[in-house]
Every structure is written in structure tokens, then in C-alpha cells.
Image (cartoon, rainbow, N blue to C red; front, side, top):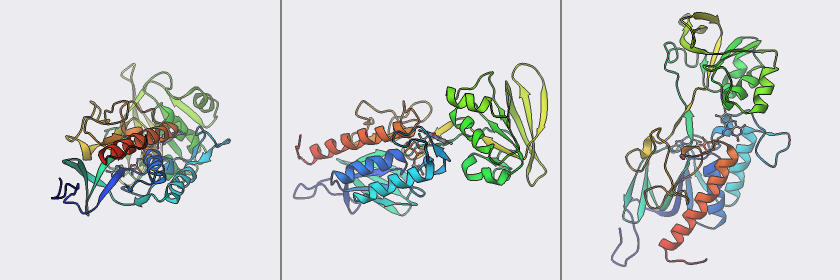
Length: 325
Ligand SMILES: Cc1cc2nc3c(=O)[nH]c(=O)nc-3n(C[C@H](O)[C@H](O)[C@H](O)COP(=O)(O)OP(=O)(O)OC[C@H]3O[C@@H](n4cnc5c(N)ncnc54)[C@H](O)[C@@H]3O)c2cc1C
């Protein structure tokens, strides 16, 4: 909306150049670039900044850190570097929805709203649920979606990891530090994880793989998990295996509920963007795991954060009639 003098204003009090939603690697990188370019930028984060790496034991494939780096340390370094350039981070500030007001975009939260000329969406994704009996009942009492968070509770226990991708195999290897035995339950006859992870897991004496099996039920005594019921994908065979913990890595759901109906999502809920990482809503960009076509890696999210930041910067400068290039 424009006031009598033609200036852009909003019902929301202050107009930023850019609002970033999500404080993982994509959002923090975008924030670093925009703050360093002296843009007026604020980052909304629903929890504490850091994103998925803050919950990952070790990251070995992010360039620049031979020997790897603890995920929490990488997340903390990213936050610190962005703040050094003046990025304003609002922790515990979830976006609930968005709307457009003429040339402005308004981000709405629980305690108010803020307006900006451009928005970068970097909300990442969360683990999918398996949807079997016992999963909800025993969540936090043996059922977990985060080995880094909960693995240490399973010292000398037998645990199962469900899934066959990179996350499942990485976390299974991590759990061998604590558990006496780790049983990977996978519905196929080969893992999807990268070759180096497969090699490590296949030669680890603590790991056993139950191929061609799906989980039918998670059983317990009312207080804690005590077993898993597995079904063969090739026969009618059912078996019950004793475990004290179950870690589920069976897919991911993008955190896009707040923008559903506002912009274009693919059939799985990931945000569709063009080559500039702009969505079908002018001025709204997406970066990282939440974007359709993401490689779901830290380095990929960082690259996306750079692209979204630069394109958002050019978009805002054009809107303000500034031409530096
Ligand atoms: C177990 C595990 C192991 C992994 N290991 C590796 C590895 O070894 N190497 C590698 O490169 N990658 C690894 N990854 C993947 C990597 O962590 C992600 O690709 C990367 O973190 C994506 O960054 P992002 O910023 O897009 O999203 P995220 O890191 O998920 O950050 C998104 C942020 O947005 C916030 N958010 C969500 N909704 C809202 C909202 N409505 N309002 C405000 N904030 C919101 C979230 O709280 C979160 O902080 C691993 C992932 C997992 C789960």
C-alpha cells in the first residue's frame, strides 16, 4: 500500500528489506549475505537457530573441515558469523502464515506480524511418521526420530533403526557407540545410503540388517518399548524381535504448512521455485531442504542460501529503484 507521498507502508509497523523464515544452514547463509550487504534483514526461527545440523552428531562432508565437525559446532559457527555482520535473529518465533499487501509481504506469527519487500523461506523438513500401532503411544518412551538427541539413553540396549537411506545408516552407526546391538530394518534388499556409509555399516560387528522387512507394530508394557513386530515383504512371515529402542528414518515432510494455499507446492508439499529460487509469488524465494529439487545436504542448503539472498537483494533494489549493477 502507498501513503499520500507515494511511500510504501504497511499495517504491520516496520518494513524490512527481507524477512528470512528458518534458521538452519540455508536461512543463516542467506542472513549472512544480506546483513553483509547492509540490507535490513531479520530472521524468524521457530526454535533456536541451527536447524538440522544442531541435531546431527558429526558432519564429514561439508568442505573446509577435514576430519569432520560436530553438527552443533557447525550450526553455532554459522549463527555467530551471520550475527557478526548484524543479522537480527528472532528465536522461538514461528511463522504461522503469510499474505501480500501490494508490493509488500507480511509474515504472521503468534505475537504479531512483520512486513518486508522480499521473503526467503528456509523452513527445512521434519521426519515422517511410520504410522504403525505403538508409534505415538511410545514416542519418547523408546520411539525416537533423533539418535543424536536420544542415543545415549540406550547404553547396552538392543535398538532398531528403520530405514535404508543416509540418515538411517549414519544414525545406526552413531548408535553403535551406546547400544550392544543395532538392528536395521529395511523394506528392500539393499541400502540407499552412499557407498562409504554402506561399507562402514556392513562391516560393523554390532549391526545386523533385517532385509525385506517392514514394521507392523511397536509393542511395549505400557511404559516402555519392548519389541517390534516385523512382516516380510516376500512372504506371510511375521516375527517379533526384542528391542528397547526404535529410531525411525522413513522419509521427510517439508515444513510448509504456513504457506499452503499461498504459493505453489509440489504433490509432496515442497516449494516450487524458478532458476532464481523465486516462487510463483513475486518477492518470495525458497532455499534449502524445503525447496523442490534440493539435494538435502548442508552444502546444498548453503548454496541455496547464497542464491536466494543475492536474488532477493537484486529484487529489493529494483523495487526501491536502486541500480548498483
Ligand atoms: C540425522 C541427519 C543427519 C544428516 N547428516 C548430514 C550430513 O552428514 N551431511 C550433510 O551435508 N547433511 C546432512 N543432513 C542434512 C542437512 O542437515 C540438511 O540438508 C540441512 O540442515 C538443510 O538446511 P536447511 O536450512 O534447509 O533446513 P534445516 O536445517 O532443517 O533448518 C530449517 C529451520 O527452519 C525452522 N523452521 C521450520 N518451520 C518454521 C516456521 N514456521 N517458522 C520459523 N522457523 C521454522 C526449523 O526450526 C529449522 O531451524 C542430515 C540430516 C539429518 C536429519
